[in-house]
Image (cartoon, rainbow, N blue to C red):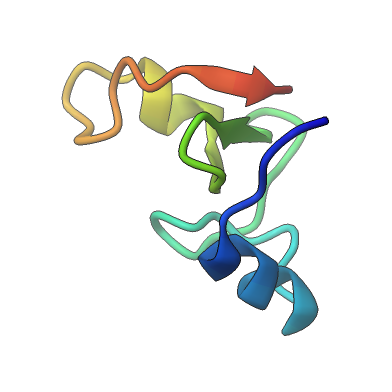
Length: 62
């Protein structure tokens, strides 16, 4: 089972399931949202870009 943070659950219930928790933009095929070990959905580019504050965060569910 994958853990979803309370903040992400609130976003999901407000219709923001496909919106990035970091930047607010929608996930796309080119830059999908991933679930991090903190329970938030963010763009894959945020965790793979060395210039991002989320760089290196572990992905728990593609």
